[in-house]
Length: 98
Image 1 (cartoon, rainbow, N blue to C red):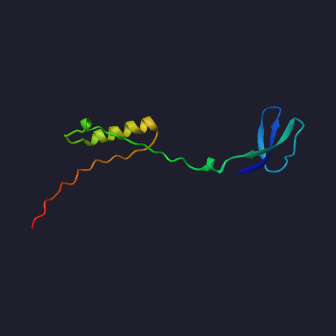
Image 2: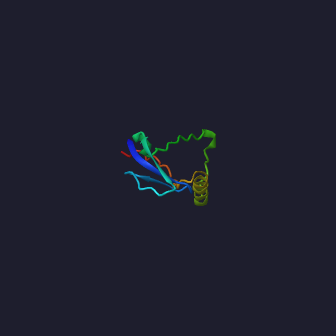
């Protein structure tokens, strides 16, 4: 993306960007600028994570709801991202009855 514009600067440090040549006061200057930005700069980033839990970390006791809430809160505080964690019981296989 190629963006041509004028930058207006005053002696007091006030700046402004204009599409067309701006009118100037006695203490102002303008500068023509051509800004070239890659289109990809406007794409939203995709967050990705891989989490591996070792076999020895598996807990055989039920996880209480407060533990799940505490984990979600800790992740949110550490990353600033909102997490929704659910714990589901694994479906037990039902033997075929014939």
